[in-house]
Image 1 (cartoon, helix red, strand yellow):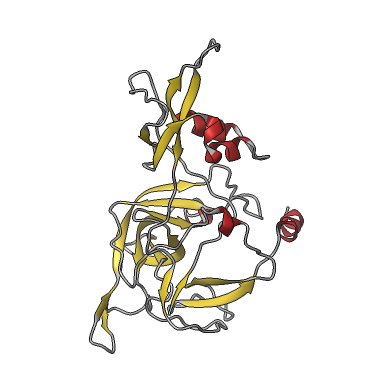
Image 2 (cartoon, helix red, strand yellow; image 1 turned 45 degrees about the horizontal axis):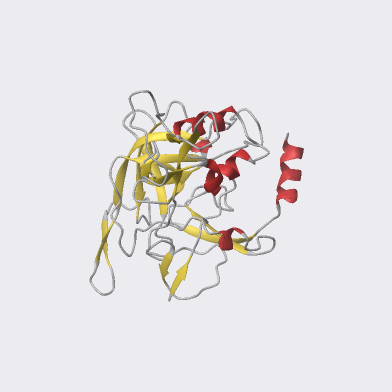
Amino acid sequence: MERLVCLVVVSWSLIVVSRVGADDVLLNNGDACQTPSGTAGICEPVKNCSYVRKILQSPDFSHYDTTYLETLKCGEMTVPMRKKPIPLLCCPKFGNSPTCGAQNIADRIYFGEETERGEHPWAGLLFYNVGRNRTVPKCGGALVSERYVITAAHCTVDKPNWKLLYVRFNEFNSSSPDNCTTAEDDEIICREDYAVESIIPHPDYDMHNISRPNDICILRLATDVTFNDYVRPICLPFDLSIQQLPVVDEIFTVTGWGETEERRPSDIQKHVDLPGLDNEACNSVYAVAN
């Protein structure tokens, strides 16, 4: 049975690398455009772009947001009776892959159990060079598109002497020397490694703060990921109907190769169900930590 799964993210930002300059071609209102991060969009006024309006209305608006919005400028629009033209911004039109969030498994109840192949096809394992030609897995991430993975900022910023090499998908037992296994129907199932091209941590992540606010990071892979039954992205909550779904006391699944109750990492991918908390409960925990 297929189940649709969406990734719940506390906070994340798109980091861009260029801005509109004097030599760039200015577009007209309604023209197709592309943001510096490669997302397709429409060149239009701010009033027509809910994505930009949400950034401007955020209580946490900062100079990072100002810099980001400047990079989205794509043209100008002349309006009668107005001295200055209205700036146009490239409003990104986000969307999920048609295959995102699908799990080819039967309904189950989890209690910290081992996963099955293809049960969490967006789960990736991050491998690092930690010195002396040793390559080890240390963190997990979630595939969100053909080229991008979301992980924790502490998996990149807090490890200055480690070099993040690649993200592995379709991993089950990280200690197994075999890259491929044979399923019951004789299907050959193999691990898939993708090199990391760039690391983009949240600009406000603070590794020295015990509560580690804004602990999120985007990884750009060097090549596109090929989707199949065992490797596909998780859905992001772009739709308002998804964003308005209840969180408190709803059950969310955490999966990975993290530390177990025995205080040591698990070679086998596992998952556990946890209840959702409201923002006030989370903020109170952070306040105590600070």
